[in-house]
Image 1 (cartoon, each protein chain N blue to C red):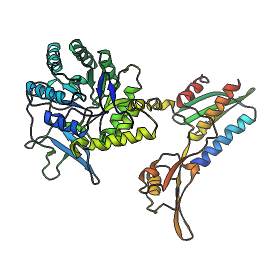
Image 2: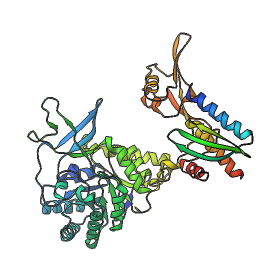
Image 3: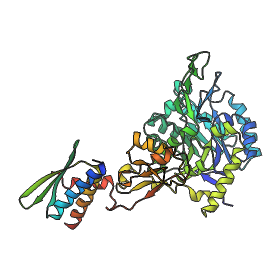
Image 4: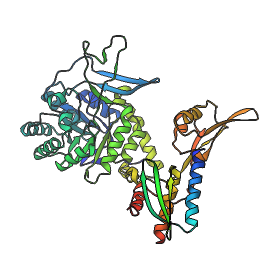
Length: 69
Length: 420
């Protein structure tokens, strides 16, 4: 899979969670990339983001969420 | 015609082109010839206790047919008695009262030594002083030049001693042989420097002779490190000038030095904060007459830009020089190949495939070989356009980002707000 395809899939996952009412609750980064906790009421799910473009995209989404709060 | 006159910390000269302290400014004969050719100023070859030189002294690095891409020297400061130099400075200043003569000085790091030479040099009418804290070879082994220029406390203290005695502006010339040149630039400023100049030469060994195994240059079979300059060092010098120009603690004018070979190089240094420039290697390679093209070229450029004075150009690009963390992560450019111009050498494809992001595809159209960039995989690194031998075959073009601009620093601040 090309990196573009991989980042597109990761971006779609981020959009899926946000469009489904999840909020970004917690983020951390390590040698394996970025890990994001999405929360919707009591439901919590973890997403690992590997690609650089998706991590940039996620940062923009986090900024959007922060501005809306 | 733009006004090319500059005023660097009170030192006035008819144009921003000075000869740097080096072999071209060794004598009154040379400096007077330079002024006749059009140079606006000259920093006299460093004065101090007369030294002894060796033979040979110079070496150059050529690259792919480009002669003197870099230049290496192991020559020391003046080998002539102070009185001889002072007499020639006096005579030159008398003949060329409107040209800038700056005396480069180097003595042991002792207060009385600095006071003595400052007084004697100023008595013959120099327009300013340049303290040589940069020369990396020979003199450094004796505790002078870059040996003292690498120690911020010594830079500050010696500058202070000179300022105690000086009546003319004091420029402190800095060595690039240090991790962060702004540290010594700040030290010079604290010591009272009226200006700083940079860069002096970079520690170097030009090469090794593969037949004799001697160093290049060598002196009877032995070599010692020299100072490197010329076009190859320009990017290093330009960065150091820019870093000082954007440092609020280095709030003095800058004289830019390092690989300046034409008016374009000079304009780049001026845009990055230099009030004037000093040239050596290009003059040694091509002679003093190169200044004619420098003057004409800069004049035309200023006219094109609608600037009345070269002083209006000083520092205009400094604000554009930033920290990496303040760059926009979401700015996007991609390569675009013009197959009508492309000669199908495939250098771009090879470079991208082997050493970058594998985003240039080869294909054929009506039996004709073609190249195409897959924009979604292109990171805008520029490599293909750098290696392309044909002007206009590859352009780097902006693509609007689908997400708003964000710097690394902004991103980290945002992420930290969510960390546990």
